[in-house]
Length: 334
Image 1 (cartoon, rainbow, N blue to C red):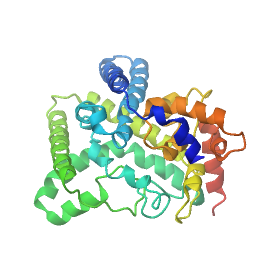
Image 2: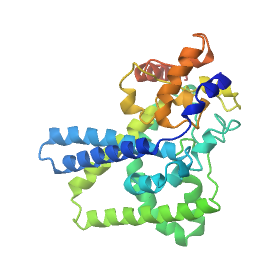
Image 3: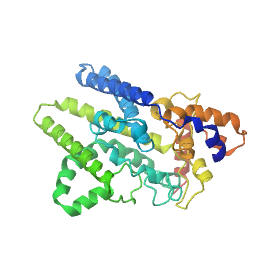
């Protein structure tokens, strides 16, 4: 399966800068435009509608952090800087929180083990872990604001706190046992620059809100929209894998079968799994493929492989089926 997939997609490995930039800029324009409309609308109904549009558009824009961990930055010049300025810093998720973390999830010897920052055996855990998993995401914007406005400056002068912040609060991870190592080399300098910028932004946002320069209503709407964004991503995370591994190393085929594709004709995955995330199993098979090539790659592989191949077994109907499957599995655990 892996050899066939690689052979069929060799011509699709080059990222197209025009697609990356246009997609990001349109998503950002719609997202911030709708966010402003939600803040300024005198009608609660229109404010909610604009807030939903803002959350979905900014969610799409933020999802490009996943691409940043996989593409060669020279292939899309300036994209990491542009993304951080437009999305990463304003939403308090600068790229260093994913770069250096997500690649461990793709390490063949780490996937699904205790050393995987993005894996928990959710299907094998108690039923109440799922609502807690979503509740944590709902409060993520407040936690990020506290991390950058309070913990970052304090950690500069308190070394033990700094170590704790780096290990526990510097990665977009779901495995509570994971401890991040301090950055080294060029990554260290980039980390410090982005963290300083995010900290200044967070402190300014809190100060401007406290002094009334930023209206409290606008601040709360911002938190509400980013909370909705985080919950949407957490729902997607719940169905990105089957979460059935108990910590043992897995073969490439097992890793693929534990991951999920939700291909067309399903329409809604365009909203809750944007920027190629609907092809998550394919991404684990060929992590170097840019997001805009995944649809073409999927169609080629589906056409070339027999219906009883492992590749076909990684495709599912949609979010409701997957969420119900996961919930049913957890309900069996007493």
